[in-house]
Image (tube, rainbow, N blue to C red; front, side, top):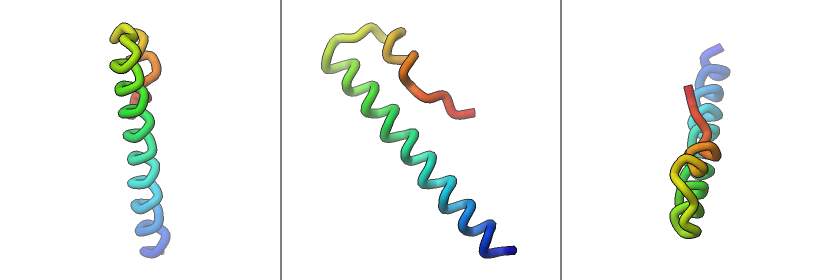
Length: 48
């Protein structure tokens, strides 16, 4: 059972990093192409 929880923590960390990369990519793309902030924020994943 402990092993399952350790794996869940690792997978959760990886998933959060994927969200972070996607968000940073969306922000940098938006800045590079002078896209309005409101439009950039629509493409940023909201993690709750």
